[in-house]
Length: 113
Length: 111
Image 1 (cartoon, one colour):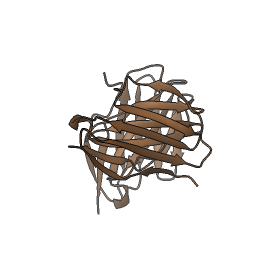
Image 2: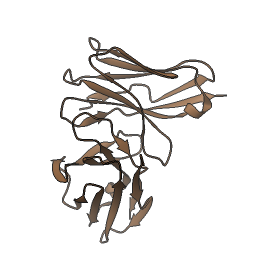
Image 3: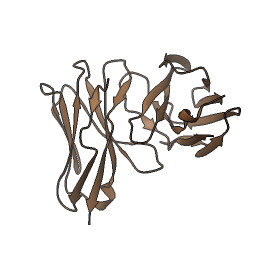
């Protein structure tokens, strides 16, 4: 299994909603990442988990809350988002966090109304 | 400040010809470079990588060239095929650090 699976593929939410994005990999990778990508822009790193511990938080607003329940799962909890948070949210994994290639999921296209 | 730049937002190439996608970087600590391909509504797919100890890496129709003195890398696709039409991102990282992505080049291969 060489896939990173993200659910849901699409999500529409209001500014007062609470929702979660889910990511799963079964490649035994020990590093997992959340990226945000706006149209015609490069993916921007949000969070890195290494061996289930948060190792990088790129000054992301607290309305985004990551969680790594185990080495195969990564969640991103969303609360009180703004319309400008609408973007493609990509999950990725790598064998560990030291310069190994990233395997990306297909993303969740999020629209905040 | 964009540390990885792809200055051509788009490129059109005739099927069978060579596609050359370019990428420039500013951080001399970068030592690992990757190219990703992205179709609409899908996540980026890894294509090919190169470490700074090499100046060329080849995988089938895809070759990546690295010029460290110029802080420049390029991806050559030959022969180009219509299925290669996608957005191509280059990415770079320094040891133990995150990856920085370029803004992407949209390649169209014309049948």
